[in-house]
Length: 236
Image (cartoon, rainbow, N blue to C red; front, side):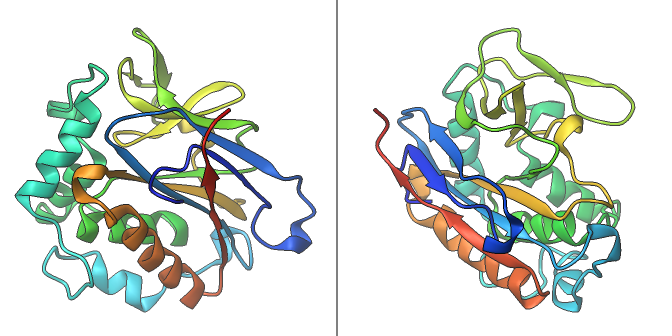
């Protein structure tokens, strides 16, 4: 998505999908620089193998990659999340920081081709990334700061996260993803064939979100998926 795009209209990935055009509206924000795209997989995720290239990126933060995180970028991402009043610390830290810790502890397991690719790119780029199953979410989509007290379930155990003050992706039912923890109700599953990915970038690292999304899309396409960017214009 263009760094300052605020309303995006696109066809879902793969014209043969036969799905209607979807809209993503991004509310004005002084720090957010977002990139988004849709992916159509060649088969349900349960039958799509994780590519060797992605598997090689996951075990270590030192694995060869075109992008690398640093302390300055991590601070900028926290400032982005903090802007609306959210406190990105402890269990509420950015997912990109969680990945670094998980890898260092040997606790990052494989989930599926969509999530593993997302995790590999987030780990090395330093930017949080959300992935939602487009067939479990409901249009229209928008990105905005969640009101105080907003909560949703983020795992299969039923645990909730308070996302008040945090930038979130909303669908017709409410918030479903953000730079910390995505909602359980729209997470991928073995039957998933189409996803929407959101790269949560910051203007303090201008261009990083698009660079990350471009690399992310290349990895998916090398594995046989089809991707289509979400491009934006100013909101009305």
